[in-house]
Each structure stands twice: as C-alpha cells, then as structure tokens.
Image (cartoon, rainbow, N blue to C red; front, side, top):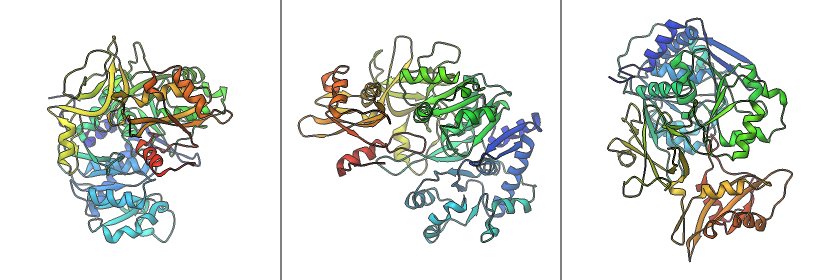
Amino acid sequence: MDIIGNRTLRDLLAEKVSLHPKKTFLIYENKEEQTFTLTYEEFAEKVKCLGRLFIDYGVKKGDNVTLHLPNCMEFMIAWFALAHIGAIMVPTNILSTEDEMEYILKHSESVLLITEEAYLEKFKPLRSKLPKLKEILLSRYQGGGYADKSLDRLMERAAPEIPFIPFHSEDVAAMLYTSGTTSRPKGVLISHANYLFAGEVMSKSISLSPEDRQLIVLPLFHANAQYYSFMSALTVGASVAITERFSASRYFKQAKRLKATVGSLFAAPIRMILHQEYDPADRENQLRLIWFAQVITEAQLKDFEEKYNTQLLHLYGMTETIATPLMNPLHGVRKNMGIGKPVLGYEVKIIDDFGNEVPQGEAGQIIVKGVPGRTLMKGYFNNQAATGEALQNGWLYTGDNARIDEDGYFFFVDRKKDMIKRAGENVAANEIEKVIAEHPSVFECAVIGIPDEIRDETIKAYVILREDRNATEEEIIAFCQSRLAKFKVPEYVEFVGQLPRTSVGKIQKHLLRKWHEEGIKSYG
C-alpha cells in the first residue's frame, strides 16, 4: 500500500470535518470585495445537499458534469459534491467561445452543465446539438426568469441525506482539458488518488500546517489552483482564501485582508504586479512564500522579493504530472532561474530523441516516472493514441526540454515543439527571450521560428515595450548581437501592444505564428 491507499476525496473531506468541524475552511471574496466564509462542517453539509440534487437530476457514478464558472464557492461545492457520488467534474474556462464549449460538452459527453446567467447565451444555440446534456443549472442566480434553474434555491429544498455510493481511489474524479495549440484540447483524466497525491506532495514540499492559509487568485478550473493550493490545504486541515479574479494592483492588499500565508502565481501576474505603482504598505503581509511557474528575469525576482518581503519558489509541473515533479527547495539553495530539483515521490530524467539520458549540461526532454492513475494522470479521455505517446513504460513524456547543472538543478530550455531549427542548429526561443527581457525598454517578449527558404527557419521576436520607453527594431537586434551567438540573433522584431495568452498567462505561440502567416500588424 502507498501513502494514498484506497482513500478518496470523499474520505479526505470526512476526515478533516471530524478533526476541524468548526474551523473556517473557505473564505471567498467576490469582485465587489464582499467576503463569505464556510467552516469545514458547513462546507460538507452543502456538498451533501448538492450531491443529493445531482442524484435527483439523474447524475450517476461515472457521469461527467461540466462546470463553466468563475472562481466562486459554488465551484468548490460542486467539485466535491460530484466527487461524493462518484461523478466526474469537467471544469472549463469562462472565456471559452461557443465553438470551444460545443466541442468540450460533446467530447466529454456531459450530462449536466452548471454555469451563470452571464454565460447562458453561448449555450442556448447548443442545446439541440447536445443530446446527452439533460439540464443547465445556474449558480448565484438572483433573477426570476430562471428561478427553477437556480442552484441556490434548488439546494435549499434538497434533502441532506445521500446514499453511500462505493467507488475506488483510482476512479476518475475530474477531466481537465489542456489548452489546445495545434489540435483540439485533450481531456486529462484525474483520479481521486491523483488529487490526494498532489495534496501530500505539495503540502510536504513547503511544510504546510493547519495554521496556514492558501491564497487562490488563479482560475479554479486550472490544475494549479486545484492541485497546489486547494489540495495541499485540505490535506493538512488548513484554510483557503479564494478571490473571484486576479488583480495586480490589489494582490497584496487582498493577501493582507484575507490573512493568507502562501500564494501561487505565474510569471505574467508577477510582472503585472511589479508594473503597478509600488505601495510600501504592501510589504507588511503574511505571505511567507509564493510558488511560481514560467520564467522571469533575475532582476524581477530580486525586485519582487525585496519589495514584498516574501520568498519565491520556482517549480515545474503539468496537468499530466499531477503534483510538481521539480521545485526549488524550501530549506536549501534556491536557484530560481531554474525549475528546481526532483521532489519527494518523483524520479525525473533528461533524455535525447533516442531515449538515452543526456550528459550534464546538455538539453533533452524531461520525462517523469510514476504510476498512471496514482502519481501521474490516468490518461486522455477517448484518446488511446495520445495516451500511449505520453505514457510509456511508467514514464510521462512531457514534451519539454531542460538541462541539469552540476548540482542537480534543472533549467527549463523550451517546449520541444517550440525549438527553432535554424541552418542545422537547434535554438531555444526561451534563451533569446531571456536576453531581450533584460533590455531596459522591454516589458515582455516572445520569440518564434518562422519559415525561411535557405535556413529552414529564421527568428522573429514580438516585443511589448514599457509604457515610458522607446526602442527600435535595430536596437533590439544590436542588443541581442552583443549577448548571443550569431545564429541565435533575431532577424525580425515586431512591437505589439499585447501577446495572446491562455487563461493562466501562458503565451500562445501558435497564435503568434498565425499572426505572422496572416500578416497581422496591430494587436491590442
């Protein structure tokens, strides 16, 4: 037996309710800065009521239910209500278009949709195309026209008694769709054991205690908020503060107001926070550390930690890896320009295209050892080919390239598919981006390879300038020439107002390539 055994999300919540029934569990701040709280006991009661309601609507063990919700209490209650009856949560991005939602609802075979009135219009034209979708229920609905679809009103009438439905720790609890780039999104199957494993790894990696409070400002439909922040807190009986949306100007004020001790961000939100006018009062917060992913500059790292009196821990993970297999140590040397060392419970290797481990210092693909359905994703829904490509002989092939230094720290190089092939040389876009980001006029940039008749590909940089700064294409290229080998220097630089991003701030390079192909010259 491993650390999880046959426990499920239902078992874990019941254990924490028995230990901390009256303790504040969730604190939620909506966009109007109103706060709402639930104790462990109150949360569990709402979970049972909604679970009963789902059963009344015909949701059975193994059924998929889509949540199209912003950050809210109802998202958390629905997640655990579905887990309580053995059903499967399919969380989606509220910014998804009608076409994107039609695909996910069809592909997931969802039988029920939970959303809000603000997003209802995008679903109305889809009802006739979705024969398996039984009903649409509305969260936080206060109007009269859809009163019979109001989740709150229906829950008030639902009986708290709920039948015991047996299921196993390796049964699927959620399906998280990856952001598609060159193809449609894939549904990543996450088991109960996966969630519990994530909570164990993440809580132990930062010595989380019941006195801690996780701050969630990233979208709840994303693995980061679910795995790292929420599950780590539930695992140790801590509390969670959730905001409806991320605000760069209010981040530390919210952290102070909600008495958060641990946070999680991506590189883009960190840059946004640094871009705000600095308020010295923000330094007086209780955040002892903030996990972060994706690359920022050394200057930005130092500036952030000094201004806000907190510790940054750079990590690496994917929806498919469950927890983070690589992280900078809490009690050790931090090399935050890198993505850390392997954490407890994971083995990580760097391999070449033939499956051989590469020598120290050389770049290769990151692969992670684990058990599908327990320490790694269970697979991709209805996609055996993609599952077989990603999971091979107990290893997850990530598609990301990295190198290892002499101390065993991993340094991210680039997405394998984002490596630029220039005249026989492999060029990491990430390396060029780091250099351009050091230019005093540059706020952010992204580098791609574009077709070239002679050299296979040449290099193009998209650059966002700081508001009060100017620079020319020639200046950026000259800056690179003094810091990079000739074959790594961009041939083209285009200045833009914004970069296309996923909901958690990742730059969508496939859209940049499309911009180039279509000759688009003006953005944002």
